[in-house]
Image 1: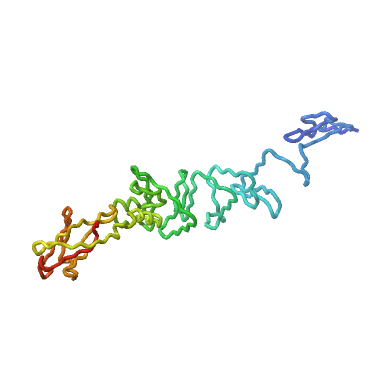
Image 2 (image 1 turned 90 degrees about the vertical axis):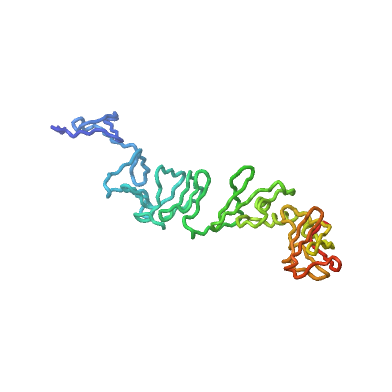
Length: 322
C-alpha cells in the first residue's frame, strides 16, 4: 500500500551535490514523487573518506580567534589562526613578500630571532638595524655603510682595493684611518720610469718634505731614490784652496754642486773649512756663491783672530762640481 504525505519532505540539489530519480538528473524532488519502484541517487564531486585526497577551490574559516585550520598531523603541521600561522615546515620555490617581513621570537621582536638563507639575497637597499640604529647598509648605488659607533671593529682579510674622485688632471683616492685622511696619488709626469702601483709622488714632488697624510710604498721609495741620478749629488766631495782677501774673506775658484730638484741645495753644513790644518769654528763663518767664485766670509770677532794672506792657508772640503 502507498503512503500519502500531506506535507512531503523535499530534497533540493545544491553546490557540489547532484541527484537523479530513476536515472534522470533532477534539481529537486519530494517524497510524494516516489513510488515503491523508484530509484534515487545522491552524488558529490569527490570522495571524502580518510584515504581520499579531496580538492577545494577555496577554504575559509570564521573570524573567531578560537577557530583554526590545521594542515598535517600532530607532530608536523601548519596551523592557520586568525591573523597568524604557527607550526613548522619547509618553504619550496619562491617566497614573495609585498610588505614588511619581521622575524620575532614569541610575540615581540627579539635579537634572538633569526633568518637563515641558503642561497642569494637580492635587495634594492639592504639595511641592518641594531638597537634601533643603522649599523650597516648596502645602498642601491653600491655604496656601503658600516658601524654606528667609534668602538666598532671590522676585521678584513685579503686584498683591499679603493677608488676615489678626480680633481683636474690628477686622479686620487682618499681614505680616513683613525681620524687621519690618507692620500694616494697617481704617477707624476716627471717620473721617467714605468707607472708605479702606489704613490704619494704628488706630495714628494710638490712639498719636498714629510707629509703625515701620505702613504708611500716600498716600491715607490726605491724608484724615487733611483730617479735622483744614482745618488751622484749625495756622493760629491772635493777639496779647494782659497785666496785670503782683506783678512776676513776667502775666495775659492769653485762652483757648488748642482742638485736634483727634489733635494735641497748646498748649505753651510755641506762644507768644512781648515786654517793651517785646524778646523775653523763654523758658527763664525758664512758662505756665498758669486758667479764662479765661492766666497767664505769670516766673523773675526767671533773667531778670535784675523786672517793673514802671507802666513795663513785656508782649505775647504765639500760639495763642489769638481
